[in-house]
Amino acid sequence: MSTLAHIAASEPSIQQDEIDAVNDVLRSGCISSTGTYLTQFETAWAAYCGRAHGVAVTSGTTALELAVETLDLEPGDEVIIPTFSIISCVLAVIRAGATPVLVDADPITWCMDATQVAARITSRTRAIMPVHIGGHPCEMDPLLNLADRHGLAIIEDSAEAHGAEYLSRRSGASVWQRCGSFGMSSTFSFSASRLIATGEGGMIVTDDDALATRLRSVRNLGLRADRRFCHSELGHQYRMTNLQAALGASQVRRVGELVKRKRWIGEAYREQLAELNMIELPTEEPMARSVYSMYGIVLRDDAKIDAKELADRLAIRGVETRPFFLGMHEQPALLERGLFKDEHYPVSERLSRRGLHLPSGLGLTEIQLSRVCHAVQEILQ
Image (tube, rainbow, N blue to C red; front, side):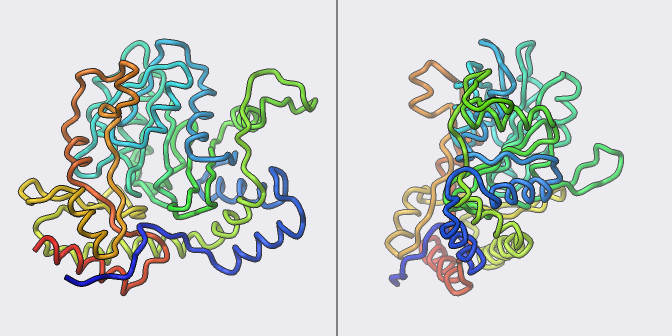
């Protein structure tokens, strides 16, 4: 058995431009939630996503919370979300006083199974929350069509899909659209494992002028624009700092390079692991241009070990991994609240037990990637 030097699951790409921008903020003293970099980041990221407005916040989780809160939901209202996702999606719905309704994952893309959504729509449904998993876009056209038919909002969770693209045919022609351009609003996370990384942080992008104005107020304690310290509604302190935005604004300028690097990582893994018959590799459907935000593999059912044992064996070899999501219907904190009792979603359950993410950070070198593949092959062959 070979011993590998530690290879992290994910590391951001921090270049001299980012360092210079952060130093510029430190020298200016504008380290709080005002400053030119904050405006630059919001404007540049919204434009990249094809949106009119960007509202930067403290995290992807708080971005979801504000996006759902501004729907003004009432008790008993429902939001349809995938069970195979991070708990932030459920938290946003619960904290808005509404009811989360689950659908299973698509077995190929691991995103929300769009074919299951129609059956979950009721007279109380108010929104659908598609989540792009692992950098692969969710099947958006059917969801947008359902939303139009039933008068529902779409809140698009693009936390893992910076720069990913979806081939939409809704206009009658085939048009590639970036994730983050769909629905009423779209949310992003900029945590350290993301393609654009500000340490922590998030953003909501939208084309709705009034919604953007309200989001800017609610993220800032509900302050009114016409008078400071006067509040028309209860808000939150969810402001991103100018220091974080300096990192983000600099990275947006080279986002094309970062997307290219992520796609190279995905393609290199696929090439080197293609002959290993004990695992299933992530797909890229014809309607998608994935960015492989985290490169996931799924152990086949006849593999003699599960994902946890594979992760443990890789750790011994110096390879850090990350587990797949545990479905919302299996989360102890949610079951204790009486949610999702006796609900089962077989695709999500299989993924959570058989899947794990290999190192996928932008700093991953070709040599490191090959060593990871060798370690996986050594364990499973």
